[in-house]
Image (cartoon, rainbow, N blue to C red; front, side, top):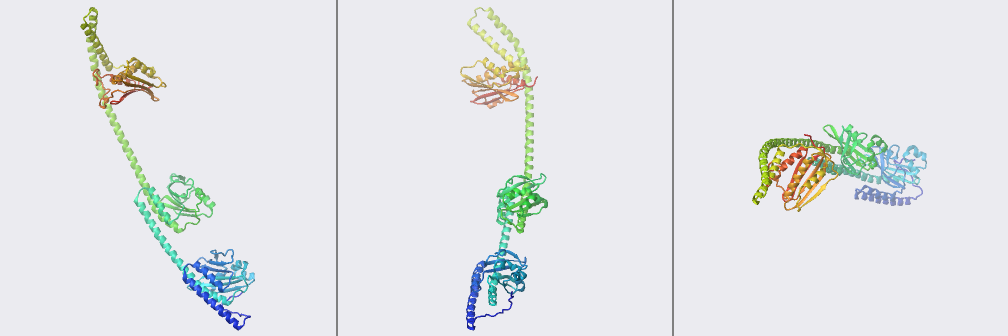
Length: 632
């Protein structure tokens, strides 16, 4: 083994003249190669292209089986092959990072001069440079290492290896040093260029990050629609932090849950928008408690799942890089921003810092949205209470008005009832005398003149009419309470129809529900109610028409019977007074028929309603309780 620091040796077996010719030829070739390398270096800043052309030129003057340019990382005490051509050596491939300790590169870095090692003895290599053993085992026997210096520092080493013993001389070392000084400058320039480029990229990234942060601020201040904010927020984040999935979780610590307020990207089972998930065993819970960011680069999957079992669906979806940022408002974690990538080691601490800066903004937006939602809910509740109070006031006012109207109506009915009762009694006796006198005249006049006979018949007819009116007055004045018993209401309807003389031009259509249960009611009063309504319907269809009678179960406690005609209809102003006593629009009658009907229906605990359209017809609906209503 030889350490070539000063070049010694003798070239044997050549004549003086031949040696001179060889020296001259070699010198010319070397000068051409050195010049060519200079041209290569000055022609481009693409260092990998320089390395390739450099190796081609070196081979012209220094034969080799392997050539490598090794870059030294002084900070981390490692080196790596920036360029490599020739025999493959395991563990010493391009860009393999190797510790300096025990290596030929370390020795060159310390002594800062070239070394030429040529030996066939393995132990000799292992004793001094154990790092050369892989190369020796690969068949190399001649090792030439040249320091590449820049600014008084060894920045790299040029390694030229050969499988031949004694392959290189001192002249080769001297030439390699000359060549190395040129490539050292190129490496230094390339490193400076890369450093400058990285600085420019870092500056550009910083500018982009600031723009994104400013843009997110504008988005948040522009709207209270949090879903719109989430969408625009995710678009801006993607410009500076690439992701395959981004999630914003909102925390509910009192419930022990969190929900997915927003999600964009690759799907995860059970983790969709709006899903509610327990906090226990989740990465979200860890971030909430520690209030610090978490960066997980998936190395040991089982360890991560053991620590955060609720991450299993995320890991099964193929994500390998997980970044989780607490969203804090008023010194409290209100949410967590999750950024995911399927690439391993996708994020750095710089990404975490940027995500934290962005997260602080979206946290404010979430807090504002929650405050806005709470305020809106309070306003809605207040409005709901106000509307309900207004309805209660309106209902109470309506109840009072109805009560007042009932009171007035009852007083009015009482007066009318007293008057009707008095009039009825006062008229009944004179009518009785007139009726008896008419009967007596019919008896004593065996053959009255035609005029007298006609007058007597008119007298009897008008007396009968007057008796009916007096009967109505007395019925209205002193209504009888219903005598209730089990009644088939359909039978009562049929009987009322059969007792009524139906004109030929009126069609009757019965739609009686035979499933109706019997009800507790007074059949005579029901017959009076239905008969009166049927008679009114016939009178409304003087030109003919159709009467539809329908019975049905309104609900389990009520039955209803409706009478629909196709008559002339009733105007709205008349409809409102239809059941008032002594109100009538007919030429004949005193307006007690429907008033009596209403009294009888209400005596059964039921109701009667009237609906009508002028020119289309009217419908009267009687609703009666199956149990008979309140006993009087």
